[in-house]
Length: 367
Ligand SMILES: Cc1ncc(COP(=O)(O)O)c(C=O)c1O
Image 1 (tube, rainbow, N blue to C red):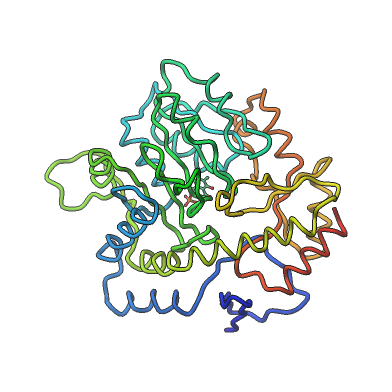
Image 2 (image 1 turned 60 degrees about the vertical axis):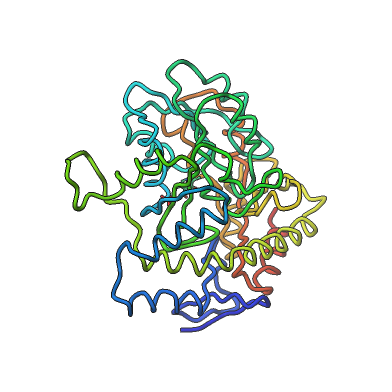
């Protein structure tokens, strides 16, 4: 096992040799010795599944975000599913979601039997467009899911004014601010993902936050099935104490992770200015946490992606396939343009200085 430390002391721990000419992955977790200890201590305690560490993690995240209550889940998708069920969303209802997002969001709506209503995006932030949402609202609309794409907060106040329950999807933006408050503190509910390559990881995992005791107790009731007096359809969507312990250890590094992301983003802004592609939107200080660094080429990104890969810098389309394409729908010009032309360039705290330099050189050469 080899450790590679960057100058801030984050370690990426691998079970393989790191060579100078090795592939730079598109994303990679930032793990430290403290994270390893956190997991080992839980294993030694013998309490592997949901227990006191999960309760503590829920408390820590809700305090950090500024919501009264939290329920940890097995994934961000499970968190979204339970949030929709707590709103009694079912067949015949509609839930508005963006097209430019991963299919987990579509799955969560489909699990409930409700109809997903797909909206186009804002071409500058890549977040769901408030005007497209307004056009999609009808008498069946029961909720709007607003994912903060790539670490960039949406104008959440404009969605809240529409008078329909808003679920903030903070899977890609934990720790970002909007107008001086943490994202995830605005909507009726907010959901998080702690998947391996997210800003803060528990391996797999998720969470729902809300100020509503009623919604939270519905979600807690649905999350697991054991020792219940009545029978109703319930799930096994529990987080394990092992995951929660890792999550808490990561949460204690989150501010450091975010400053490092901003530092790398500044470097990219400086190195890539005046080039033949557009850079991410600049937000107020603390409002963008650069979960991804998305650039937009003048034409289709395919040949650039291949060339970058050949030079061992793994860049990706930021969304694999937009939802309206899966569903064979037309009329999403901003999503289509973003899908065809955008490229996500590696940006994460465990990048070494050497790797950053290589990314900068290769991107300048190819793009
Ligand atoms: C915006 C968004 N919402 C929800 C999810 C689902 O999270 P998970 O993979 O933990 O189920 C993701 C996952 O990447 C996501 O990016």
